Every structure is written in C-alpha cells, then in structure tokens.
Length: 187
Ligand code: IMP
Image 1: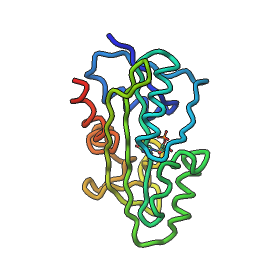
Image 2 (image 1 turned 45 degrees about the vertical axis):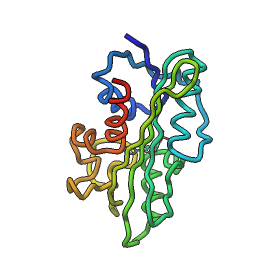
Image 3 (image 1 turned 30 degrees about the vertical axis):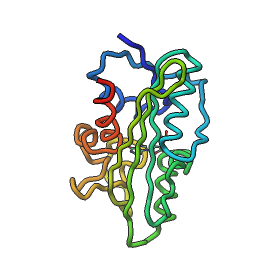
Image 4 (image 1 turned 120 degrees about the vertical axis):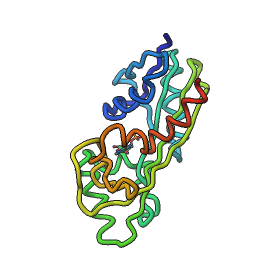
C-alpha cells in the first residue's frame, strides 16, 4: 500500500478527499501542520500543483493537493483564488461576500476545484479540474458542509451545499467532479 500525503490543513477537505479516494490502495496521511506552502500561483491549478509538488519534494513522498474556491460573476470572479483569504473565519468570509454582492440581481457563481498528485521528486503525475455552477443566496441556509456551503445554492437540486447529504454533494460538487476526472487516470 502506497502512502499519499494530503497537502491541506483543512479538515473538511480531508474528510471529503478520504471518501473520494476510498477505492485506491493507498494510505492517506495529513501533511505536518508546520509545513505551510504559500499559495503564490495565479490559478487554482497552479496552486494545486505548487502545494502537491513542494510537499512531495520536502517529505520525499507522493502527495495530493487541491485548490478550490468560489468565483462570483457580478464580482468579476472574486473571491476566486483568494476565497480562503477573504476573511479569517467561515462566518466572516460569508458576511463579506454577501456585503459585496449586496442586492444585485445577477447572483450566478461557480465553485472550481483543481487537484494534483505529485511524485516524491516533485513532478506532477496526475491533475484534473471540476466545476459546479450555482447561485449565491442572500442568507445562509443549511447546517452541513463547510466554508461557503450555506450560501451556495444548486438550482438542479433546489438545495444549498449545506443542505445536501454528503453523498449528493460528493456526486455533483466541483471537488467530486475533479476527482471523477482524476481517478481513471490513476487506475
Ligand atoms: P483553499 O483551496 O484551501 O485555498 O480554500 C478555498 C476556500 O474556498 C476556503 O475558504 C474554503 O472554505 C472554500 N471552499 C473550497 N471548497 C469548498 C466547498 O466545497 N464548500 C464551501 N467552501 C469551499
């Protein structure tokens, strides 16, 4: 069984990744907390590759990283790659996004996720991207999930990410779609 280091400190993401990768013959291990990689890339894919590559090289192990975020049309794609840095707590990030969006009619947005797996020498072996289209609600709805989930409404399911069962979110979320495209490459 191969060891695969998960290059994230976000426990919500780790939980979801464990489920996506359950069928793989590998042992997932969270990266050491003190190993912080600065996200200096200008796209989700650049940041996912940067994190996977640096963690793999520094630890001499295979590593997987994802970079994801929410892009809102009426805010010219913000918060985008800065989604995590939009505030210091989930509550603050949601409040800022709702404040900046105000009562604008166009509330379309999408979650984007890039995933990359690096070999122990830091080279990228596999990568993929997934997108989930939705709308930003004026008020949070639902108690599940993490991050911006309570304000991200998916018309197709008539639910926010925070109202969905984990299996429904897994199937249609940006991360689910990115892993769906990644797994056949590995297998
Ligand atoms: P990063 O990928 O660790 O840079 O973080 C991306 C940001 O987008 C964080 O603030 C997350 O909370 C948020 N985010 C990423 N994926 C999701 C999701 O599935 N639901 C809600 N928020 C998410």
